[in-house]
Image 1 (cartoon, rainbow, N blue to C red):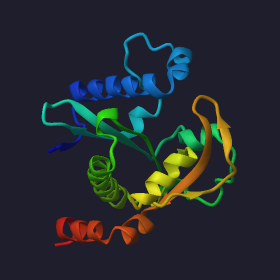
Image 2 (image 1 turned 120 degrees about the horizontal axis):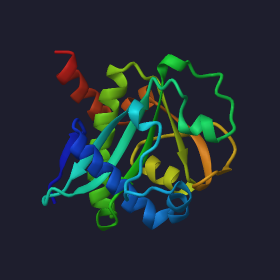
Image 3 (image 1 turned 180 degrees about the vertical axis):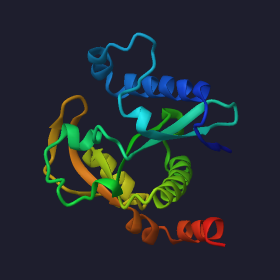
Length: 197
């Protein structure tokens, strides 16, 4: 299976991303959609305007995965606005949050997910380096935290497991950009070739 990986840079594709997010959340957190009352079968929130969106298209041109990087947000970040932990250790202008990491159910197998996550890591590392983002929040379920670590996205927990308003039990977590690069040295080499030559 071949995929096309894109930064979302037009309204039409962004609307498709919102529809994809709605579809995935309908499968895993239908109560959130019911509470939120979206009327157009698209899921979006106040953080999207401060986000870079990234998506994967399958061979039919259908969205099969997405992620967003919220950065330099004047309204804070979802993890710190919905969970309790000490955020005083993080410099505001070096901070971001990665969220809405979704893969379509039909591509959720070890081989395909690994291929998609590898490209997500590359894209996110490049963006975090270029935006001078040193660390990136995540609000993560224990099982997803383990899965991301298998794929060498080594988030560290920074608070106790707690009940999120909409999404069940989660850990407030942080991903260090430097650690992401060190754990995935091939991404550092790609970055150097693209930006430092």
